[in-house]
Image (cartoon, rainbow, N blue to C red; front, side):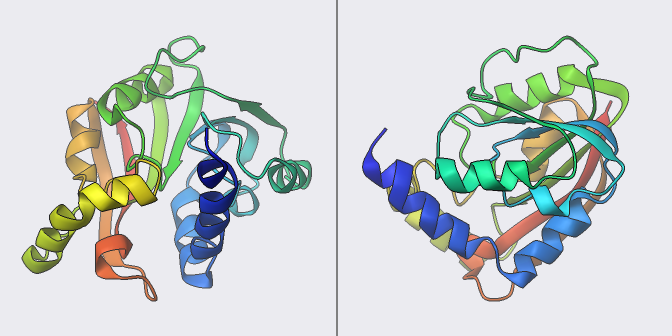
Length: 206
């Protein structure tokens, strides 16, 4: 893991993804969750203060150790017990079937190398009555923007540590065996369309 991916890029990401517009999207995304929740792709912990009181415990997974002291402070200030595991979500998760009441992903599915495998594991560990909540950026429905996303994607993967601009998030989720319950598409103000085209919603196991 390089100094760039451990120190520089996380600071840039932390700055870009804590605007009031993004915070609003986080609050709306996480609001339906309750009980024991699994968050995939924790990053620098920007979701923590937006979880509702109905979440009683949070298990967080991330393969990277980014901004360790900053993350530790955010975990310490969390309103619920937090367990952090350093794992690649593409592999077999160390939880039994039907373990969690909820699963959350925010700006995560763009970066996981094998997002399809990770989503299948999320489905496996989610209870039959559980809820997946997602907030992701990805492929635009605007053809001009989508062409730019495809053109810029090779560069984006290098400078953004594996992040893809053009993944079709809804297709990834449904192909993993989820039924999307609610889906909203928009562009976050203040971000370029190639980066800020988002998919926000909820899904359940089919």
